[in-house]
Image 1: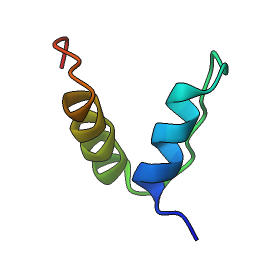
Image 2: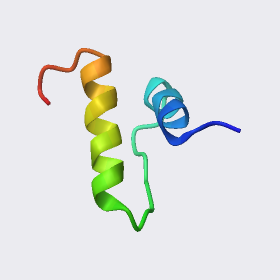
Image 3: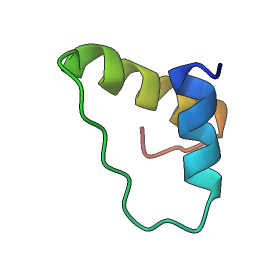
Image 4: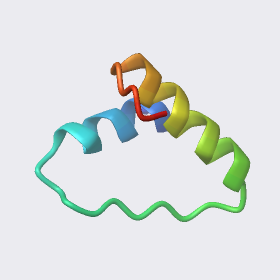
Length: 45
């Protein structure tokens, strides 16, 4: 089973233009997105 970060990274690489994340843990999701953006070298974060 994939964890959220691995699954999200695959979604970012896919051709999808919109990714919808439903979670009760907004801060945790935001943190994971920021960490992944930094890992990929996104300077806008």
